[in-house]
Image (tube, rainbow, N blue to C red):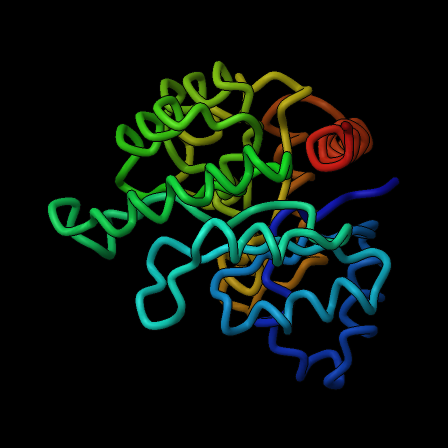
Length: 257
């Protein structure tokens, strides 16, 4: 069985419990059948850290992008993003999107402009997008439609079925994180039942959003296993089936030409 963590921040995982070793962290993940990883960039100041992990480890891939809440660092141009995305180990653009939880909608023109630049980069590079949306679902979908976003994933999905259906209709995938294991996430579990099998992905978003049974502890990519396990339970399927289909979907989204 093979499971892919389709969204993690390996450069931010606390390695102390792994003896300070990335290799030990990856070995721990392999013990729980998690064997490939997409390490996601959130600012250009730390892009080299993300990229270095991907270049050093064949099982790690990387993205390039600037998170919608990042305001202190470099605001990227399309040209800069395209240049950084040229390497074959950079397989995605993002994470990008809109976040009105941290920034007032009325003062978020810069977020919307940045999102449009990432969509243009994705469309030009033919590399899928990783989309973050929080309290901004209507504007997120509106801009995706206006800019004709071609491919990608709604990462760490926590919205309603109507939002999922709209994203699916645009050809996007839906990725579920440890949130589906949380006690108060019954509505999200209902959404997880409805997403077509060929559009599902799983992730940890580690070091954030640690799933049950490890809530309260730092997250790590190994715990993608528990996300897949819960998704299997929700959908009445085996974890082997969830592992197989989500791995196939990862390959289809990020590597099919």
